[in-house]
View 1 (cartoon, rainbow, N blue to C red):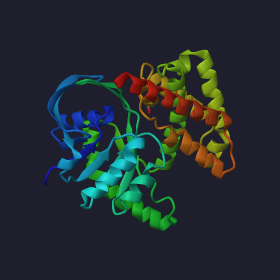
View 2: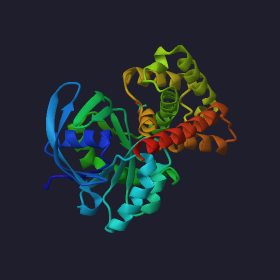
View 3: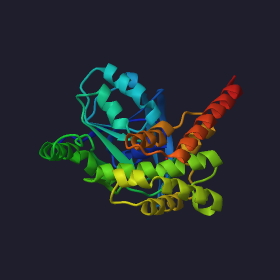
View 4: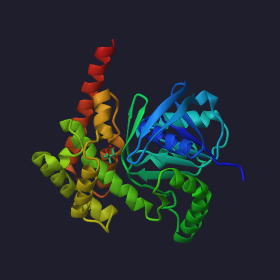
Length: 322
Ligand code: PAF
């Protein structure tokens, strides 16, 4: 049997996390980044052990096909990347999208209609500090598909079984490298749950410039998080009928506690003067709510605040570099 080959695209903390753990298991993995960077030694500090690995950043112009592709770029960079992948020209193997937000499968399918696309939801925490990779939170990774949602029941079941079979070798490999990784039959629910959690933790930590744990530790922020979650009650009833706003709030507090000292990805983006994923998190949520005539005033307010912060931080970063 020929060994599996995997292309990972995105040189942020998630891309490096998976590359390092897969390399450690001698998997044939190539990491693609914006710019080529020759072999460099990275040190992985995982909760249980420390190891080193050599990682090369390959440019997309040096693309080599593989059995699977994992995309770990930000949702904001996905469209441009899919256009590049389309230009690379050959038929692509199955793709797993590993990033925050929703509405992203649609983008990939639009540009790469012949490719099977999955979306993963992961709760691993990671931070990249130069060549130090910190695995800050042991989580789990769920992969499933939601592209069969609009088909009739039988067609959807057949398609899901086929797609599950297609991805099994990758699931096995990922699970060996970084457990727990598994197939999720209720994936739509998992993605919605993560979306709701991100819609509370990410903007609040960015707006108040605090670590995730302050959603529990700071009384006022905690009250606002609770209010924002309560406001989602009609959306939850519509899109996640097995949950309640209280159960989602418990999950928000659980994740904030598990990732207590983490700098959320949205806060990181603001601090670095980058565009945030707000359109793919709260923006998507507002869009889905509007479809059901549900208005979420405090979430609308939050989106405005983040957009304002994006502009201010972009401006201050530009003035530093000029
Ligand atoms: O986007 C993030 O930062 C993460 O999804 C989470 C779970 C909020 C932890 O920081």
